[in-house]
Image 1 (cartoon, rainbow, N blue to C red):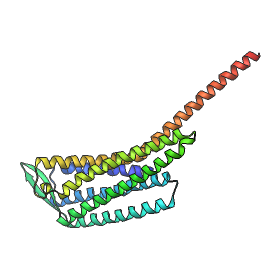
Image 2 (tube, rainbow, N blue to C red):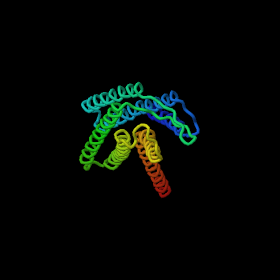
Image 3 (cartoon, helix red, strand yellow):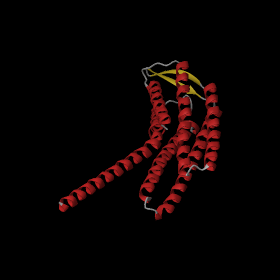
Image 4 (cartoon, helix red, strand yellow):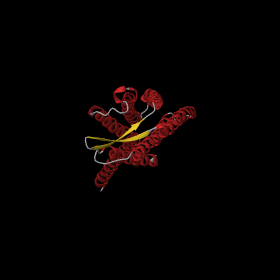
Length: 262
């Protein structure tokens, strides 16, 4: 998990730097350089998404008490989606071209797509959203089941809090993914953002999309790990504090009883 966390974080730094490099108007990029930058950004996302999905699969596998059926089901659907996205990334890299534009004294690199590529890209985002929704439903289902089963046990509070943290982080990540997917679908399917039309509104929309992608992939994604770790650390600290207070109280009682005996 630590490797996945660090990997996603460093990929996020790379993605943010390259994205800022392409957004600065005073930096001139040739069509080849712009295409290389675009390809690296695309493949960064292609690598980051499977890493986050492995984290989600690991969480669900643990929540379902290491169920083999759940693991097989999630792995098969994960591989199918990942293979499709990988093949799409290869096609996108091959069939895109870059064009250097000079608008009002500023340099911009425009990426031209084949129309079929945009359609396939939209399908990829839709499939990813379906997979994310499926994992969210599985997480909510097992959490509700555990909440019902733990009502009779004294450990309900700790375990229930842990499942609450799991669901909160998962829901927040899912909402961010759906938001990015909707923005991306509008970008791919709307004629307003078609190639060759660069307007201030389109630039603002694209910039907002990039910010949301960075937040979803490289901030909220790693929170899937940190949320549980922070909760576990808090439980350990509270447990140690309670144990320490109990020990102090016990020692004081022993001291008082000894003094009375003397």
